[in-house]
Image (tube, rainbow, N blue to C red; front, side, top):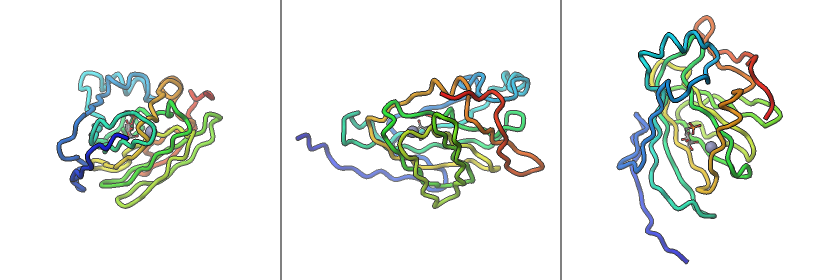
Length: 192
Ligand code: M6P
Ligand code: ZN
């Protein structure tokens, strides 16, 4: 048995930043090429190349069975055309692994989807504990005017499968229409 040392890290609930984060991922528009529906709007923003989101990871816990990892994600406010800033979205490489999200700041949406294209849309405000069941792909979206931050905890062995979502996205697009969030069908979507 490997008795790794227990630890506690503070998370700034207003900003979502984890103290002494081991790994920080930054994704700019150029890291998400082709993922937004409006390619003309994407091209118009290409030179500015805005920061879309950051991921702070607490520790690099070993990817072994039984271990957990946790992170926070902070998505900037903004849109590409009508479509709100969002994460890439992924399935777990080990599809049987679930995940738990907890809203910290701002206002967001968690969109989930089965490989067959069934979609579920969950609103995430501070205090919302949203469960990502096994086998559902998941993406988060900032639908507010300030950064949207949430905490995530998942089996260390879950892994990432970005392929299907990078190719055809989710069955619904989350857009702003007349100042409000709306889900509309994604014409580019095909089943996994
Ligand atoms: C959450 C977790 C992470 C994930 C991050 C960004 O913090 O689910 O595992 O990396 O969101 O999402 P993505 O990897 O799809 O860009
Ligand atoms: Zn996940």
